[in-house]
Length: 237
Image (cartoon, rainbow, N blue to C red):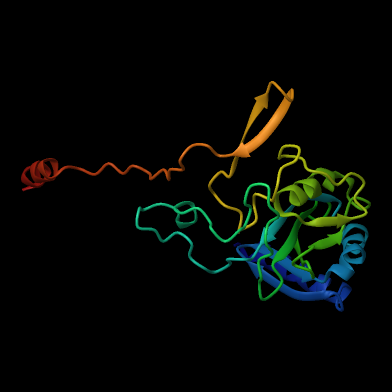
């Protein structure tokens, strides 16, 4: 990071810490980016201040985050593949035609991360807020402040199950009608649990348990043969 860019970020950080002193829970500069963390109760007030006082007129993106397995390795496997995809879950989560169990997590599991841009001041900012309730993660909708966030919030609801209060049209946007669960949650299985087909008798699409045996695809790695390695060594000598 250039000295000028570093100074600009530090200046913005100082301005926000003064302007939003009571609301900011944490403020960090890392990887050439400034991130501030606030509480859900302060979200709307902080968002309006960022838009009106600090000229963050554009919301670039909003996404959900699930911290269930944060900092833990989940790629260990005897078959050189993804461990979560090796064995089907047998703990009752997402069984066909059964309600999913609630996963216990010690801490705030879900967060909503918003990326803002100020064209006027040439600044970027990441705004993070953790949901208070893991069973029903909820934050206020930012649609009344940046109306372009509508579909971003629908996506976070669809993939993470995060609810946005006062959203004008909060419904799934990527998954199919009647879809069970939220695919980007860390406890959602990598294996398919159900399949769909058109049923002529009922004249509609129906869901059934997967009828084929699950198989974990292991990436194929092509390594040089011993003969080829020997020839290469001889040629080098």
